[in-house]
Image 1 (cartoon, one colour):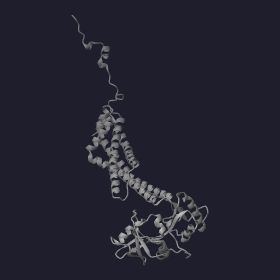
Image 2 (tube, one colour; image 1 turned 120 degrees about the vertical axis):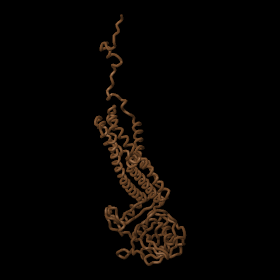
Image 3 (cartoon, one colour; image 1 turned 45 degrees about the horizontal axis):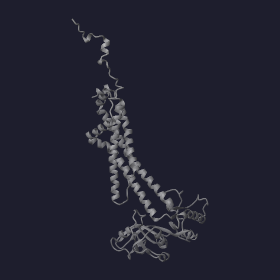
Image 4 (tube, helix red, strand yellow; image 1 turned 30 degrees about the vertical axis):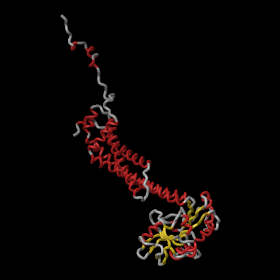
Length: 445
């Protein structure tokens, strides 16, 4: 009779050697509990869609911040390009001599100086420099009264050479000539906007206007040049400089022997001569004004087109960066909003976190999940803000005020900063979630 041996009666070593002797790998070594970044991104977007209102409110600060930064940088770039284009269209050989000094202090210090005179203009003209022309300018602001309207505007006294240097042309009528300028004739040339303000759709040429109790006959209306503010030629009245100096604004020097000028514009024949012309004029003016020869006490400034353009570009760039930095504050506010909502999300999902850690998720997996969720929120808000900022730039361009251009640099800056904000403010909630004790998390109510 054959004796059957039960498996329970088998020796212990035989049992240990069977298939059931395999042991589970430790959770620290098991890689199946982790998850891919793509899965985390998918879950993050599902969370955003499931809580639409909360997600939009969370992203609002980022949206406003990115839209503001992109729009302001686009407007700044457009304004800078417009200024550059207008100045370069005049030419590259212009030189300006202005009263005051770069070392002056206080608002309006340079414009308040009154140390350039018609004698200085004549002395510069007598040097025999390689110039095409030279034109002094003097003016102020006053009420310009027409029969049916009046307008407070800039009045510029200059010479016919100024129109040629600035590429200013008459749309109707004519510009005043050298004979009228020499005689101080009471004639006026109106900018396009000023003529429309004073005479509407009627004819301005041949009409009369009054400025400070002086009557001037309108002999021409300028072609529109564009630009804004009182400095635009479209908004000014031009008259012979001798008439403006003697009969409108009282430009006589304190000694009574001459007349003051606001600034002097010169046109060099060749761009290569600009530096030499500047140096020669500086020596002349220092001698005439009894100043130090080393230039430390100069009471005048000489600028050429390149330096003037560089100064304007620096000013517009700094102003644009300042506005963009202010707009960037809303990105920080948006980052605080992201941190708050992520902390709320950690509290709401405490049990979920505990369950994931109980089945093998590591602390870095939990931390990665919440960091990715914060980045998804900030990046989504950044893309929406980018669209809004681009739309603002497009509307400004379509309005033809200026051409606002969205640069690649501004896009990278805005999106990079928004993601950096999301990462910075998402780390703390992520670390807090990763440090939760799984047992306490599972028991959380």
